[in-house]
Amino acid sequence: MEAQYLLILDIEPYLNPMLRKRPFLLNLSLLLISFIFSIALGAVFIQPQTILQILAAQLPGINVTPDWPNSFAAIILAIRLPHTILVALTGAALASSGAAYQGLFRNPLADPYLIGVASGAGLGAVFAMSVHWPTNMFGFYLVPIGAFVGALVTVILVYNLARVNGLVPLTTLILAGVAVGAFASALTSYLMLRSDLQLHRAISFLLGGSPMTGWNPVMAALPYMLVGMGLLSLSGHMLNVLQFGEEEAKQMGLSVNWAKIFIIVVASLTTAVAVAFSGVIGFIGLVVPHMIRIIWGPDYRRLLPLSILGGASALLLADMLARILLAPSSLPVGIVTALAGAPFFLWILRRAKREVFW
Image 1 (cartoon, helix red, strand yellow):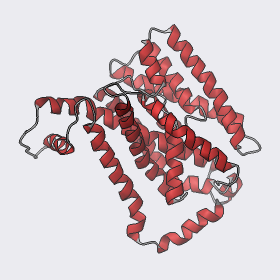
Image 2 (cartoon, one colour):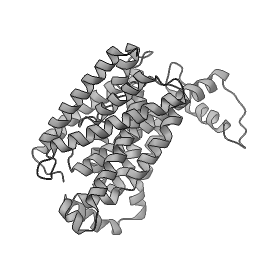
Image 3 (cartoon, helix red, strand yellow):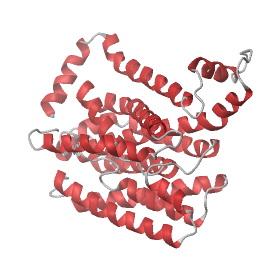
Image 4 (cartoon, helix red, strand yellow):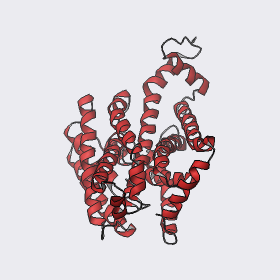
């Protein structure tokens, strides 16, 4: 890792400025295309041009002559647009949290789902739902608080169980994550059976199908996610320094304990909000940061913002597949991400036997 990281830092000043910007332009373009087609897909396909006209008509000072059915505007603005925004925010949150956990633990498999954080957040969210199902804004703000507490307790527990002589080995991290995640999932199932939650809502939630629709969950999740992802994007330098080890990081002037607490709290908050409003979705936080790292290098100052863009695009693509495969019905998006992510996880695990990632 040290040689690879230093090599990137050495050649970066000599790269053409347009080449340095290209990853962001490429990922942003993919996100915009995915966003438009996510809105277009449904029981009724709406042309991308019509979507852009309807969205433009909502902006002040822009007059667009309607040449589309009135139902199209209602479908887009009330149903598909908030759904697409929530999916994009969730993918971005999970991918950025996964990148942060991987950098903090210096472990390539530190994904919110695999290390049990998503299960802990799910437990907290279901507990909050059993107390007050989110039918108003109070309920919508209560759910992420419960999810955050569950995620924070879980990540602290997994970290302490997996730590050996100041390091977090791959084997102990997976074992601790599986054990704690299974325990949290068992408690979640118990709460669902004991509470008056509708069973299909709860099952859909655990499989990554959001039981919440409309603008209320978007407005409730938006401030948490924007703050969380913004703070994670600013932590790139800290994560770069932590890759050299805790002792070296201290010698370089980094307050290691403060940095670890900061990253754990922010990543847990971001994961918790994503789980609270979109359900338990696996492998986005594992696959996306790895693909970004392979293509554009391990510098976290670039990796984190690219993971935000890539995570949003990846989950939008998975969500579109979930709606297409069993049309007119739809699969929970967590099933699609698991089907795609599990083989990728096995490939990473096999590669980890032969290579040093960090």
